[in-house]
Length: 208
Image (cartoon, rainbow, N blue to C red; front, side, top):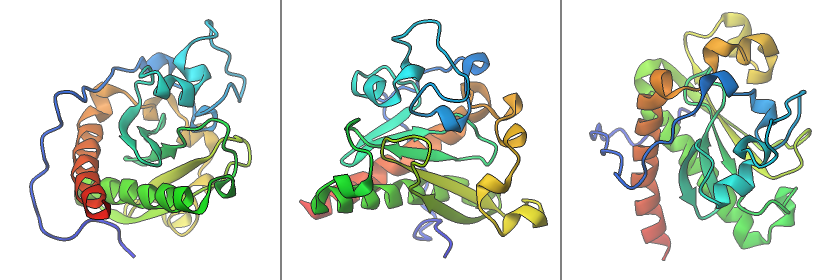
C-alpha cells in the first residue's frame, strides 16, 4: 500500500521558526548502523559528542538530526540519504531495548508515531517517484528501541526494488556522497518536518 498522504494536494506548511534545522558536518557523518552507538569502528574524539549517544543528546536538545519530539520518541532524519527521506523514530528512554519492554499503551504510541513519520516521509517524497514506504523495527545490532522508515522508489534497480534496503551493498548505502547534509537534503528534511508537524497536530488533538 502506497503511503503518500490523503490525496488532498494541500501545500506544505512552512517549517516553524522555533524548530530551526541544526547543521550537520557532512565530513563527520557516519553510517546508519551507528545511529545509537559507537559501532562499525567509529570512535568520537570527545566522549560527549552527540554521535556517541543519539538518544541522550536528543533528550538534551543537542542532536542536530532531530526533526520533532513525538509522544513515542524522537523523529530523526537518517545519516544516509541513499534512498531520500530515510528517517527513524528513536525511543526517548535509552533503557528500552525491545518493543515489548513498553507497556501496551506506549507500544501503541510508538508504532502509531512510526506510522505518522512514514506518512510524513511519503507525502514529502511523493513527487520523486515514490513506490511505497517500508517500516522496520529490528535492533539486532543496536539494543535500543528504534524504528526505520524507508522510502522506496520506482527508479530503483530492478534487482533491488523487490527486496529490503539491506540488500544494497554497505559501500553504496553509506557512500560519502549519500551522507546527510543541509545543503543537499535540507529542503527535503524541512518538508518532512512540516508534514509531520501537521499530522501530529491533527492526530494528537483527536486522541485527547
